[in-house]
Length: 155
Image (tube, rainbow, N blue to C red; front, side, top):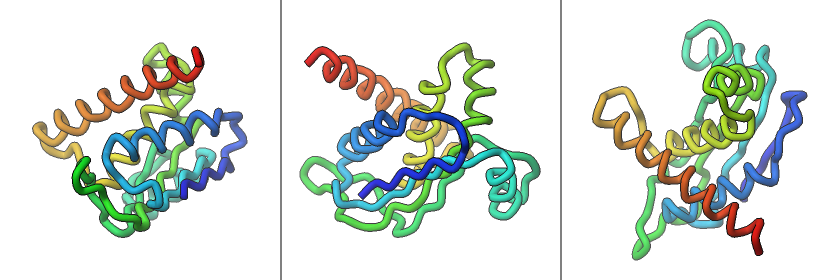
């Protein structure tokens, strides 16, 4: 079950975010019955979480809170159902980053959601080799999702 709750005050395409999370979970061979919450919050709420959990000032773009420490599965051995955890995204910070990067808020939201999901699945980017692996996988997931969306729109 994927629960999306938008408390940010920003109009976000939640249906596309839901399809993205479903796509990413399938691609990572995680049970469709895994539970995940995606919470969209404003800058004040994100800053509070950022200070509380990371001891860093100011709002950030995305935070992940893993629960059952599930890891990616394989086609032969998918990850069993469980509680993946929570992804918290701040669309206001995402908009600023999208403006800087020269792409849409939607593209940035897709990137941050996938990034947060990978953190829930145990990926990190603290070390250069971890960063290469995580960001490469992130690109693969976003590219395959974009292709899936194009096929869906043509159907």
